Length: 270
Image (cartoon, rainbow, N blue to C red; front, side, top):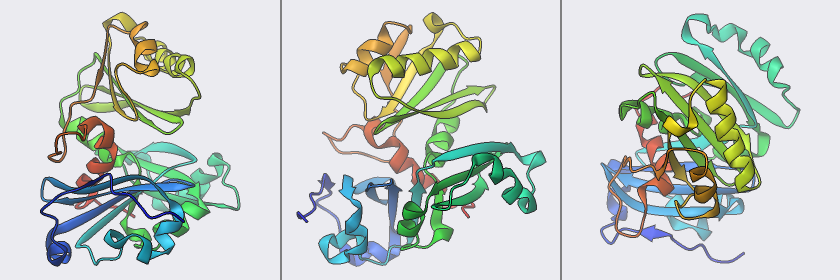
């Protein structure tokens, strides 16, 4: 296995302060993970698409071996459903999970998503087992922080939010400050991405030429995905929302979903 490469390491990173104020944030996928270390509102370290085996081999990646004050592990989902808080019953989670067609190699989690909803989701057992290294009680749905960050930013009825991670796009829409729509789709090319964005707009009875598409994650306004979206929507832009201070060369929209997990530190995650 090759040695890990830090995408970013703050020159002031102080290992002596790790257990007094640093927070470790992780996004765990089926075959890889990304992480960030934040201190207050400052990004201290960031690495993307690390080999999942590094989680089991602490000696290969020293920043993962320390006793952090806080840890939040965002779990990618293979299926999920939102349940309004007024209808949520912890004792009925197993019954609802049946509709997710849970396989033997998957595990089910349930937690508060926002002020209005709980989310019940399933994830690959391999992902859950990896997260257990830091404790399953410290896990969160991978886009929980992203949704919260956007909710706090004052989204309008003309904003459609996308987050692109690997081969999936999550699409989010707010109405009167509340989540009206959230879903995730697998896509393999710019045409499919544009199709899903247009499909969601149609389902919500929104006019594409009056919508702003605000994108975070693996995206560049000038890449093929950006160009294709621009053919259908009035405005397509990178999400400039900044949860933590980032240095020059690290674009906030690239790591928004990851750094926004810091908002889950004081939230109920189980």
